Structures are given as structure tokens and as C-alpha cells.
Image (tube, rainbow, N blue to C red; front, side):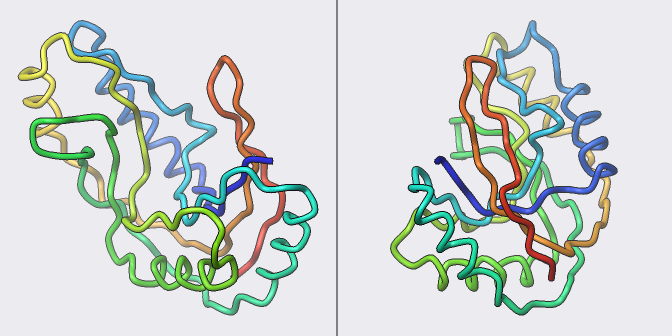
Length: 177
């Protein structure tokens, strides 16, 4: 099974991010593979391919994480890797110290498995190529992200199933904070 830990976002946040994506969808400027609204999430740690036996152990190991609910706020729009290269479009987060603490706790319980995803962001799309890079940069540099605030009251263990239509995420376990 291909699994990761993440935060499933509230519908209000998913709706807003979907609107933001739609405002950037100009096929004459760039070819971008947009993340479907149903897949918006915050990745905490990607574990990769894990046997079902090990998934059962991981599920139990995370039950005793003790952290209070916390609030996050959408931050700036950005892209990776930076400079002149643009591969991933994302929205950052503010007040993310509690999120980093949650990542640390998850990492401690899953030492030796997967990759810790430091850097708080929500992926919107993956750039395939540009037709008019300068125009696209002008457009994203004018973006004003609404500082939408939301509560994080749980995190999830997700399974990622790949298909020809892109990944589908399924919640295997939900952990309340």
C-alpha cells in the first residue's frame, strides 16, 4: 500500500483553493496538472509502499499522539523549486509551529520509514510546460491570497491509489487531536 500522513482540509478551504485554481486556468499561458478539489490536503509525512502488516502496526503506534487542536491560516502563493524554475504551485501556511510539532511526533513514531515533508504548503498544481512564462509569472505575482483561517482537529493516515486519472486518496485511519 502507498501511504502517507496528512491533514484533510475543511470544505471551506478546499472550495477557496479550487476557486483560486480556476482563476489561474489559462491554457494559453501554461499546461498545468491541477490537483482535484477532493485531493487537497497537507502532507505531514510520506511513507511510500508499506505492507498491510506494517500498516496495522503504524496505525496502533500513532494512537497515543497527544497534541491539542490548533489553527492555521493560509499564507502566500509560491512555487518550487524557485528562481527561474517552476515545477510545483502551492499555497503556504502561517502560524505553522503546531503543525511542525505534529510532524515531529509522527516522525518519531515512524522512524526509518518514508520522507518527512517539512515546509507547510498545499499543492495546487504541477507545471508541465509554459507557453508564456512571463505572462504566467505576472499573473501569479498579482495574486492576493485570502488569509482564511481553519482549525486542525485531526490528522489522517491516507492510502494513495494511482490511476490513469491521477491519484485517489482514501482515509485508512483518522486521529483526533
